[in-house]
Image (cartoon, rainbow, N blue to C red; front, side):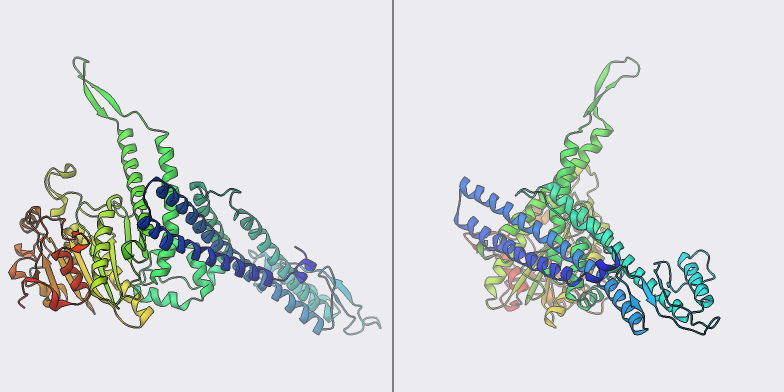
Length: 625
């Protein structure tokens, strides 16, 4: 780029283009939401058969196309905004240099050189003549002339020396203006050379299919734009390191809309993982992570299947040399373990996507993906909400227990769905959000022999202790986001099923400036690591417990004997001091049953606590505190 080009350049055109791509992004985002949240749910409710399934698949491809366009337009918006900022800075620097030169009676020529007039004391009876200088971007950098390691400072020193020796005082000032012009042109040239290839790369294949390859390219595009926009992003205050939810929320509120869009586009995984940020923002970020993860995992699985190693090898008797059996090879075992992780990830992603598509079915509200990572912890992470918890009058967070993995999270999401439907019926005119929180390493076995464990993992409290700070951080984030949105708090209930109640016990028993939740429900609990409801950080009259028949008694008694019940006391014991609710669950997993759209007693009781209808809860035994 030369002086004439920069002089004629209108950086506002980049800004206008960014606004246009932002408008496109918002348009396709709205179209995606309509397809996913309205049409898909209605289609599933009203249509059946192969034709309906085929139509739904086509619809799914269409909104995936819209989602892809939304993400790419976000990257383009950020890229053009960053380019505008750099070009605008260079243009202003150029204009300031030209204006200063003209005010000093000098002329800036068409090639960017500066002509200066005659002036100074006479030499041999003549006033020193004027002349013309061409600038260098190495000059006028403000460095120390004594620093030989700094080329710009050496250039400055040479310029100053030449100006001091020149008989015309205008010479030195002309060199300064010319250098400033040259620097502005160089900065604009560097920005052009940096951004031109990046913008060319932000181009999709000329087809109508968004493939896994396209989504993988989105990740590459994001990395490229993030690297190129470093100077632009450096001017934006970054999120607080190891920030608590309150400071996270304050940081986000302190950003301009343009800065928020930039961080959302370039750091979707980080933004989606920040407790305290608005649910709408985390949902958008995590849906990008979900789509990119689906592509990456699918591609890796395809490559993995193409290179399956030999499964087994023959073992021979060392004395006779006769074959005595076969064992799996180390290579195949490692290959199979990776395949299982990839299968678990794909299954979980598909389950989450199906929940998105069920919005509107049986009245289900929009789902918000508040956290997602297919390889976090041991078996993945997913936090998904029915309805917006930032604005809900009542929020329930459901923590699942033993054997939960990302690949079977549909059972846990279904429980949360049922809790939402029933709570919503019980509180007309009020809003409710139910959240499935799975962000910890759940034990994989509850009895000897499961998963090859002689000593069941569910007998060990270490999984709950490790999960407790994470759950607490999330609960604090939910509170902070709600306060940011409404200025008030939500009535919040923590529900733990089985080992999930142990996680809640370890989470709430620590000292706090304020309670983690307004109500706690322990469902089929093997113990909460406290022997009194009063040790959970809130009034015992807001602690609730529920027991089931069949194997539920085995689970609860196993926890008592295994040590999850502190001093052998579990929440359904009278000594614990919780409200023991009536339950008609025939088993450990039947607390959320519905029949002909009628809730079971156990499901209805949980919903009554969620919406604060305490007097209507059917009790087997009232708490004594």
